[in-house]
Image 1 (cartoon, rainbow, N blue to C red):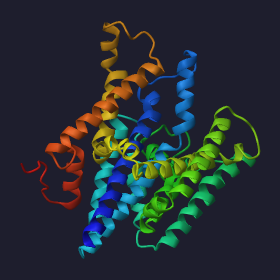
Image 2: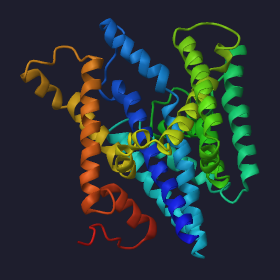
Image 3: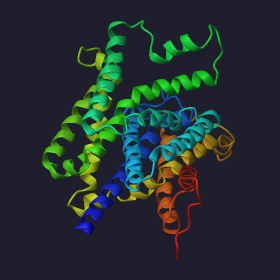
Length: 376
């Protein structure tokens, strides 16, 4: 009986790694135009169409997907430590502090679109909820989503001159006419954290309620729901992208990305646990890249910023392929980079237990030396 239980636990962890890998790809695809400093507005129709496709499918749906995974990971660590009769809070505090510092450095020096600092902020807030039973986690997630995310959409629609949270905080905390500072950056990150808080809580609720297993047990119903959610969500996001002004569209700007996120989650979980080997194997390459998501995320920023913002641009100019940066070119480079990361992650984890940054993060989390190389 114990071996069956361990196998089920192992399968769930494998699916979580696959989800994390796919979420990493989704965020990367959304960020490519920003990382490469590319505007598609005056480019060819194929560039504009590809950019529109990525925006409709993934923009405002990729971050919630990763936030969902972060919520699961946080409560997973909490429960593992609790089962060992250890106090989880000092460990989690150190873990989040390290993430905050790395995120701040990454956001300030490398890529302004960093998500790590915001996730660290969210982690400290989530510690207040981490002991809550499943029903209260769901209640708080719904309250956060309906009360703030959807509420702000309705407020901005009916009162278009009202201030957003970050604007209100800037007016409150920063002096009039004060130039942008680190304080403004933190305010923006805090505002983003509040906006995504519900997704972190939904992730915690999903793990505590074991919804992954329940979804697998109701495969036909979940496939149907996934298809319905994706159809409704993508339709709504398409209408928003092309600025269709309708009562069921414009006031619910955050509703449709959420529906897409849920549809994607259901689809990935069902695909990864499919009884058809070909389907389930399709997601296996995302498992190792998901295990090294921290390292791969930082490497994506380093590589792209180097290639498209600094000295790398001259490399393209010298070989005669850089006249005007195109979105399709940046997307092509991004896909190649991600494939290389998948291969690199697979080979790395054959020799080592963790990715480089995961290993550093783990040592800082537990405050002790952690073996990196596998025993031969």
